[in-house]
Length: 281
Image (cartoon, rainbow, N blue to C red; front, side, top):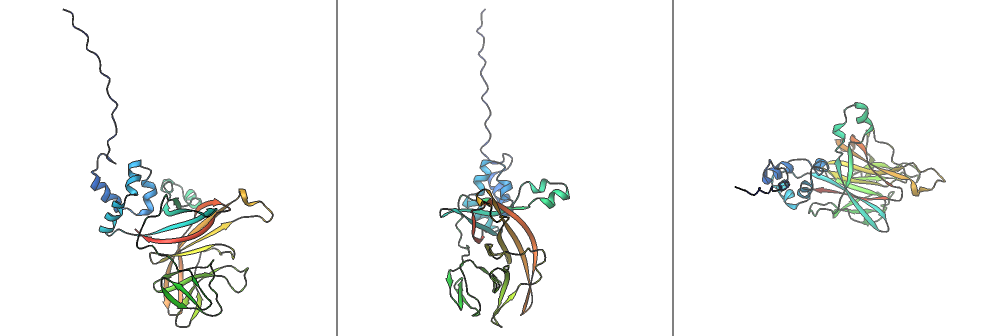
């Protein structure tokens, strides 16, 4: 008896599961990532598009807050020209931990700035007031008396850490390097932040920005090697970041210890470091 041959049905290609990591339930994965430092989010974002979507979700930051894992983060704004701005966030570089030799680690940057598509909304964003005068400066709705020998300028940067006002200023000579100082409210004078071993000189014409980074001072500045007479269009500039731990010895002396220092991003020469925001997320 003749029996028709059965038609072979083609197997449909298996599609990946919609879960971020198939072996983990979504809620468990959300809790795991919420307990991870945001400095490592750039590394996690390379796992998959789904993980990148989770890292940007408001739900993740709600869970971080409920678990008590909110942390201080730095957001950096750089002017790219024609009144356009690009925002970055500080993170650890994914490839740093894969370096094995000590020589590779010394020559490689551990931290970097990753580009943001948007700045997260947070009620904890710290902004600095733009009130400038000869004798007072308005900062976070608090007014601090300043000496008459100093004038607040738009290119100065300042922050408040532990109820102490810090600033980066020029000396009397406009060509002298900038210095980190703090304001002594008892003596009503500015004092230099001492013991900054390892921190390079801050050029007089460099843009420097300060921020309160979880009780420590974050210092960001530009540095370039522009040769006099050269055309800057094809040159680049580096943005450096240093995190400084502060120690108050007495009422008239504060020391600074450089915790780490790194070149966090390289940009075209025409770009300018605009501002730095410290955000708790």
